[in-house]
Length: 214
Image (cartoon, rainbow, N blue to C red):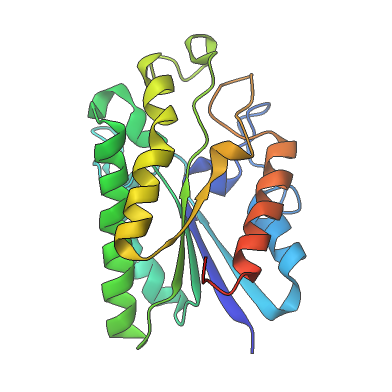
């Protein structure tokens, strides 16, 4: 019997290609690579959405609030054995005026829902890997996304690991700091390169294969 791994995230889970503005092929995206690394004992569900936040309503695209789709997503794919949650980068947009601590707290709200909803709907709580997103690149002022993100996003994203780790400890999650392993493309300072996807896939594959005791 295979285990279902739900990857819930934003454009870096979707596989946004900073070179083209389109999507990396499945065998390039970290989610597709993760499936290949884990093999047939696992079923990796790719649930990435460009612009998705933790719990914030985007004034232009309110449907990208990560909280709104979380329960339907968990219910659609149940039973879910493992959730890899990587959100927070879009919360750094100037429109939200959110600190790193507030963004991590938003991720914590999602973790609470995952725990409570799965216990009710499938009878057990999945392992949750809370991934602190990569740091925003120093070249954000030259990014095509500049104006939505400003230079202050760089420092705030650098604070993510401290606050995300605290959230993971509070709710009994496993913690992975993506910034330890991958950066962002110099083309837009936001999205992973192909190499970044490959590296993150290997890191998360090892985390998934652990028994969850760390």
